[in-house]
Length: 112
Length: 112
Image 1 (cartoon, each protein chain N blue to C red):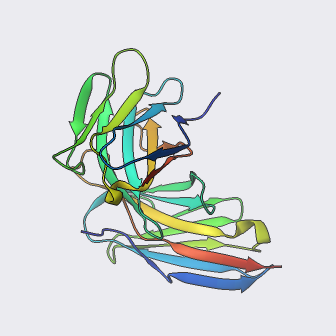
Image 2: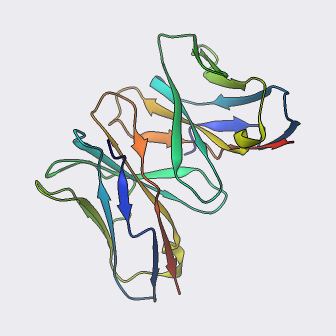
């Protein structure tokens, strides 16, 4: 039973480019969560989605960031016009909505 | 605002000793979870304790929860060098959207 998959594991972008991060939840999980971690910090919640619905996006910046979890395929976190401050590790987690969230290995985004 | 606050921020012990990490939080919760993160890696779920539970065990791990003091502790007994990692507590707030609120973590070093 594969765990949460994220790709790419490392992503390098220049300022102004777009970053697309993908997350495939564990089999049978319909709840997906995105978190961001800055160096030496804990994780900060960004957005919580269920299939085709955004449930809570209270942690997501209003501009340049968007997330989706379509009926088919992985969840996507999209960052437009990236800036240096977007450099961080982005983690996806999934659950069945029964409390425990299982995390993927993360995508480390570096903005040059 | 930061919900979970771990204490201490860093802990260095010898192999075989016990390690105790504490976590305080601010709001009412549904559950509290502990995760481990090895340097540069993803998060591994260790244990979940619900708000109506006071203590839970899993192998060498013991977690306590005191909702009146809004605090939890994680005890690792007979530590091993492989336990070296950062440990985070995360709370799911009561009436919230299932998002987890993380502390900044305790960096544990177990010296062989």
